[in-house]
Each structure stands twice: as structure tokens, then as C-alpha cells.
Length: 567
Image 1 (cartoon, rainbow, N blue to C red):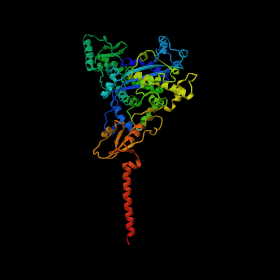
Image 2: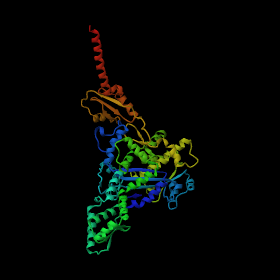
Image 3: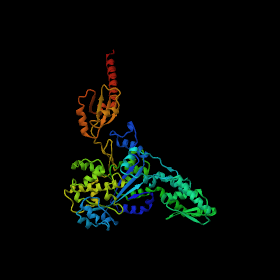
Image 4: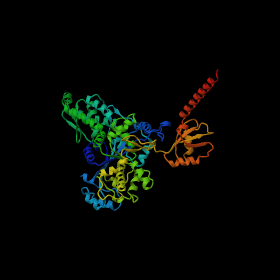
């Protein structure tokens, strides 16, 4: 289900109800760009501590924005009162589920008849977002060509993002706009096209020339946040009109200037309520974000670190400079995080599943006969108006990827539960049971290209388990650069390269086999000598300290000898 600015506010009560009844929520976010094109030491690398990685990535988060958020709300069938539609699985089961698509939700007995252990219903939504442009707020953001091209390949609708995007703001922005609105100290910076605003004003002006006091006209087709903006523009431009928002559009009424003054000063609570409505519309998706935080449901993503950074920056507060403060803030907002990338990484190694490169491939492997618990895994059906993903695959559409995250979580949890018990549980597993077996992975979020493989949001980060650092000593190659060193090794394997001295470079990879290959290949190389890096042996600081100590010791010894030889 796609939601833009026009449909968002009326959908909030249903979304709040779904959150209250949910077991967990799947999340995926699409951005206008991923990383700034930083150079040199500003690029992320395997040498980075988590705090270094955070500070470098923080710059990119501030530069780019969110264009689409996908949420998939998963609820066990017993807790769901809405209708469901179609199973995402292929094969005989799908046909069985389709027979019930027009009927009330399946009961537990139906799932037993289908031969499945338990069932969940998923309500998946795509939210198109666009930053609030109102009053003093006018956000700047960048597009990255590669990201735009990537989303275009998968049919992303940029018109919905740019024209129908739901506004949003973080708490700092909300404080500023709230103060401006409630004190009346603000100016409209309309998000509507200037030509469109001009058309509206001209239309109302022509009507005013012929209208009498008390006459009214309707501006149809204007709803949501735009309706408030149109009213503000008209009230500022025309002193002899009054506006009211109704279901059919904005009502414009011709009044005398005295009556206008009376309406402005005598409306009291109504005027205050109207300003609160403006603020509510300006907050947009941030209202739902607060609902999500208050629901305190487990949040599930895949490689979700960038998602969490954007959630903090765009809806909570600007990202702090302190990495530890960021971790604490996220843990307070979402006490239970599960990154399916982190979970599946271990399972894939142990069960020797085929290599996969994206979330959809992970889902397909778990949904194939390679998964020993495929037939006993929970049935997942789609909620009413969410049947799209039962019929076709939509990779890199945020709502679909959010659904995949939740589905992968249930399948992996069921697989882990069977391994714990040594057999398929006879009773229907509950979601708390799944959480128990997932406990080692809770709040462990995968980290791409850093000194540690994951971040622990509920405690200190774990020490690095990366391969050892190598040191390259270059002979007979004056002026060699880090890029040239990288090019020398890229056909064999990929290393992150960092200069240590004029003729020495550090090499780091995330694969142990690459370390073994390079040590073997360059064992007798005439100009490039590669060995394991030892801090006390190779560090320039340590060498400098040892040299100073040697000089001091030599002078002390010389002074001692000269002192003994003197009469």
C-alpha cells in the first residue's frame, strides 16, 4: 500500500491500531544518496573504529535525505481482526490461501489444515516522504547520481516523492516551527508551485469582484498540509476574506474588514486549535514515528545501520558528535533491534547455504527446499489492501524489502528453534519463543567496512575479529601512492591501504584467505616485502621512542665511562 501526503493523515488511526497489535515491525528505507565522495582518510575503511566510522558517515546522513520508508507490521493471526489476502509462497499452499482471500482472517485451525505450525499477517506500506517546507524551514539535500540510477532501474516513482511526499521534521525543527506558529511570528514559504499559488489568488480575486458580503466559494481538490498553506497565503494576501477547511475543500467567504478582525481575535480556542492542526500537518510522518517509538515493538531490518542513522537525524534529533550518545539514543528509542544480515551470516556458514548477494536471494533460499524447516515454518499472509507483494516481486521497493525482512526473521527464528530442540516443536511457537532463540543477535547491527563487524546497541562493542594487519615495505619505487599500492594487489584480492611511513604501507582485508594468499605470493618479491604487522616492531612512534632511549642511554654510558676515567 502506497501512502503519500493526501492519504497519510486519514490512515493514522489504522496505522496506530496495527502497531498496538503487532508482534514486530519490518523496516527498510531508500535514500537520495548513500555516501559523500570523500577522499583520503575521510573515506570509511577497515581501519576505522566504530566511533571513526560513525563520524565519517554522519556527514553523509546530513547531506542526503529519505525518499521512501517501508514498514511491514507483523501480527500473529490470533491478534488480528482484519481480513487477510494471499500467501507469499508459491505452490499448492498459495492456491489454498487464495481460496480464503475474500473471507475473514484465517483461524488457527485453518493453519493446521494447511499443515503449518503457526501464522502471521503482514501489513506492508510504502511512505513517500519529502522534507517540510514551511515558515523558516527549507531543508537542503543532495542527490547522488548512482543512487538515482539504481532506484530508477527498479521503477522508483520520483513524482510521488517530489509531488506527493509526506512532510516530516525532527524535534529541533518542531520546536522552532511551533514557536513561530503559536506566536504568529512567521512567514509562509509555500511548497506549492508559485504559478499554482498565483492561479488560486487570481481565481479568488476575480470572484471577490463580483461577490457580496457573506457569499462563499469552494476551492476543491486541496487537502492535507497544502490546504493549510493555501489558507495562510489567502489570508495574508486578501484582507476581506475568511477561510475554513471542510471535507470538500477550502471554503472562502467574503467578509468585511471589521468582521475579519472579529474572527481573528474572537475565535480564541478555535484559532489555537487551528494552529495546532497546522503544526500536526507540518509534522507529518514524524507523528507516526512517535507512535512507532511509543509502541516499543521489536524493529527488524537488513543491514539497517544507515536506516537507524537517518531515523535519528530526520525524526528525532540531529546526530550528536558523540558515538556513545548516538548508541544510547537509539537504544532508548528502539530497545529491541534485530538485523537479519547479522543473523543470517552465521546460519549461512553453518548450513552451507549458497552464497547470496541481497535480501531477496536470502528470502528465496529460506523459502526453498534447501531450508530443512521450510514446511513447518509459519505461514505469512498479506493484510487487506497489501496484496501487491503476494503477486509479484518488487526488490528495492521499501515496503517489499520491509516485508522480506520480517519474513526472513520468522524463517530463521524457526530454523534456530528447531536446532535448539533437535526437532520441529510439536506446539505452535510463539513470537516470544522466537525472540528467545534470537537473543544472541538482539541489538547487534551489522557494520559495513569498519574495524569491527557489528555494533552492540545495548552495551560495549565487541573486539575486532578481522584478519591481522599486514605491512608492506616498498623498495626501488620512489613516490609510490596508496592508490598505486591498491592497484598492485587488486587482481589478487582487495585490501584497504594506509600509509605508515614514506616506504611502508598497512594492508587490511576482511578475509583470512586473502592474507594467506598475499603472504605466499609476495614471499620472495624483489621490491615488495609483505609481512605481519607487529606494533612494537613496526610502529613509527615506538621506533622513535626506542631511538631516543638509545641515544639517551648512549650518552649516559659515555658520561659514566668518562666520569670513571677522570682523576
